[in-house]
Image (cartoon, rainbow, N blue to C red; front, side, top):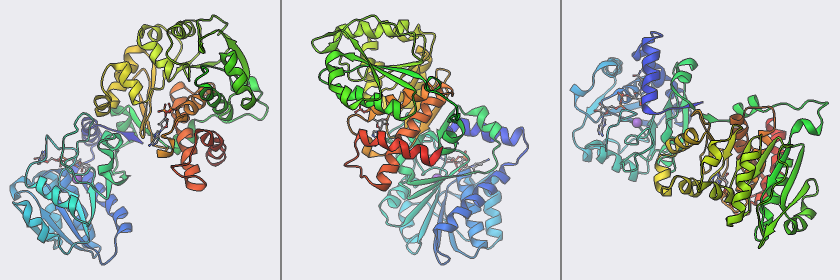
Length: 504
Ligand SMILES: NC(=O)C1=CN([C@@H]2O[C@H](COP(=O)(O)OP(=O)(O)OC[C@H]3O[C@@H](n4cnc5c(N)ncnc54)[C@H](O)[C@@H]3O)[C@@H](O)[C@H]2O)[C@@H](O)CC1
Ligand SMILES: Nc1ncnc2c1ncn2[C@@H]1O[C@H](COP(=O)(O)OP(=O)(O)O)[C@@H](O)[C@H]1O
Ligand SMILES: [K+]
């Protein structure tokens, strides 16, 4: 499923109409019809429905919905929140069809009247403004939105909750807080931003006839779902051996943080790596060896409990993860630099490793093999020298710019994890839940990512699949035997079993 900006949506729309010859009226009919099919599953035959229509094509969708429901014997009324002369083009065509079928319309000039008009309605359909919103919502629409947000009535938004921007970058808006939203054609980026996603309520996308080639042509962003995971995840050959599944190295740990590297190692093995070596201090090896029975170890020099500069062969690995629990000690930085310069395989940099590359980002830019950074918003903001709120306003743009500038893959973690390739392709992973907001979750993701980077799939797919597995494990655990409160990172490792058994 593709994710679009408003501009991309208009491009897809235009292409479908101009190049393929599908008329706008027909797309509008498709949108309204497809939404009604879904809506009728949510409402009773006796429900009273009030459609609030605006001036643009979003209002046009509203008129199609009103006509379809009316013709299916529902009790429908349309409140038009703009003067008659504002309804033009395809929307006017569909308003007339609705009226020709016996539909009634009340035109309102002031927001106050809405209270009375919807008093006997069970369901309110919000078709005031869609992706055509410019600036903050004007009256009377803003007043209607304020009313809708304090009513108990069930509000269904069409395409996008009215007033909400489709794109990232804007945080000051008045928008409908919908109970549910039927998104037309493709989800918009605002459905995946921390400050705007909740306005959609539950959402579902309806297809209206945009050809995949049009979506592909305009959007480089997609929602990574079960289907993508199942299609791209390589199947195991019955005669495979451990060498086929990757020999990985995890570098990290310190006396203060021995557990994190143990978790990355375990997750990497559980997710399917053939062999994993943990490179850490002698003391950490002694501490984690009893719980890391399946891995091998490489002792590196230490200073005051932290990894110190150390040269060792890094050319016999298929992928390396570095940074987990290593601390931000000055001497460790040279070790990170050494690995980035010498390794001829994909290198994943996480946690403290991200602090070490900050002082000289050319360390990653110069590499010819794939480099992957897996920051949470705090780490990403640190790398960019901006604040976390600034980053979260435009995470897609910041991640894409960083990935392009430094030729790296970026996994920007969060409720909506954004995976970005150096060429600008992006995917959003939505698996996962608040049970993951706990120390150690990131270490587990790094281990799974290491395993995925060594399987027969592109690095972009590998990272998308790693995020999918990590979040899905947490989701299955919470659905079955755990809660948001008690879920531990080590449970998420065990849960990988169920993800594989269920989805591959
Ligand atoms: N081919 C098409 O025409 C299709 C259009 N579709 C629908 O059309 C929508 C986009 O249609 P439009 O481009 O006409 O735009 P909208 O209908 O989203 O909004 C534009 C209208 O809102 C008003 N408006 C903009 N900013 C405002 C503000 N701040 N305060 C108050 N009023 C404001 C404008 O005066 C304009 O009349 C989509 O969201 C979708 O619902 C879909 O049906 C798909 C097909
Ligand atoms: N509320 C949430 N919903 C979904 N996933 C979450 C949520 N909170 C955290 N996560 C996931 O948990 C992981 C946390 O990583 P990170 O912040 O590096 O944790 P730590 O450093 O404590 O191990 C990320 O993969 C992130 O996407
Ligand atoms: K709307």
